[in-house]
Length: 143
Length: 383
Image 1 (tube, rainbow over the protein chains, first blue to last red):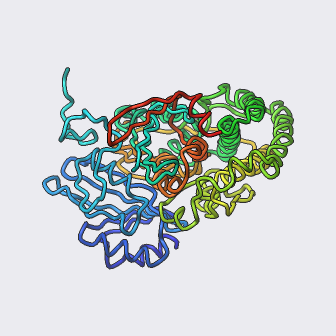
Image 2: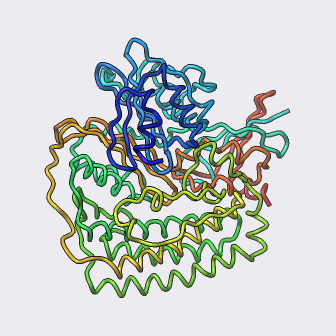
Image 3: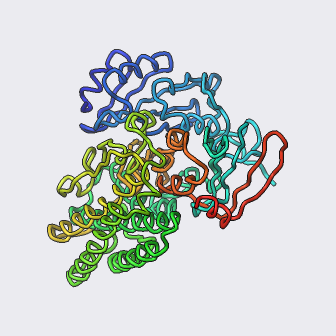
């Protein structure tokens, strides 16, 4: 699918799309419609998730799911309010995301609901609970 | 009864620390768990604190083996953010150095793989040939390992006319020896005995777990970003995407060896068709708010960078997903059903880009007894 076809496919399920070029687009949606979007992608032969990026923009945490839609890269943005940092897992549809979800859980404190293995991935065992290294409001502990 | 065999953080097949917990029943592996982070340096956070120019060199140091592809991806992403186009000649030079990198990375893989299966003569031959390509890298970029060639808006060094015949001679030599290695992988009984039908990842699982690069291609997934989402000079270069159907260690080796031949082809074409002209354009690094995603085909597969700018000369956020990380989700399918003795070569067949040492600890979960094996002992085990 090229960018226009992906945009057309997701038209009813996203708020905003920004086509960068014929093989790259950004789309914004919310977590309620996430499953619908994933199912639509899956039914059109999309099987690959490249990664999940987390961005703390100050007021909310943005999750950007990067899907490879052969050859288009769909960058799907979901905004999570800081007082409700939870999102459903996507590994039932995209099992390749299992480590990326663990990554965003420990880096941003996002709660991925339904994840079968929510252990830490990169951070050491003695890293303090509730200290999320990529959050903007993080207070760097002093020695 | 099952035993947990922790491999790493210090491990015989890898040159960096990482931890794998293999659950074994007798000789058979029934499960594997992975613990990452022993080489975690907080680079994503650091990248968001330095200006775009400093970051070129930091991005290059994310990986020692595939450093040029990191700096190229980073520079391409910044160029996209800033809305500039590097000169054509710079794109060709980048492609040349990236293909050099692929050749040396695959030869390094071949050397260590040969060592893992006890074929040390091949290890030495591969390392000898890798030296040719390291010399060529030094000739073109001034650095054997870190090239420091890339900059935002192009490259810092041009390829001089008198360097071209030297590179071509080096490539001829490499091609000849590589054809011999290919023949070895096709015919040598000990290589086939140690590599065929090990660590099999079938095509369905390769697709299901979003594996990347030579691992996916060895399982029959024809996917190479140089063709599927071409960048830089690649739309103008012609080469074949190599795939194999076996999905085993042997197929992964064959894919890498055949890719070296294709890379040599690309290098020759680059040298022949490289246009004349400038190699860099000036760039203002105070970039207005924007965001972009850039991906390239590193020697180990898809490398992806996400960048967001905020109007200053420091990026707001940089996210890097390296290729090895992309293939870890498929580990379970590769190992389950295999035996303890094949762990080193199957792990190495992923060409994991983190590292190792020479000790394995066996823990009996019922009694809690711990025993340690040295590298020599685990080597004896697999014979």
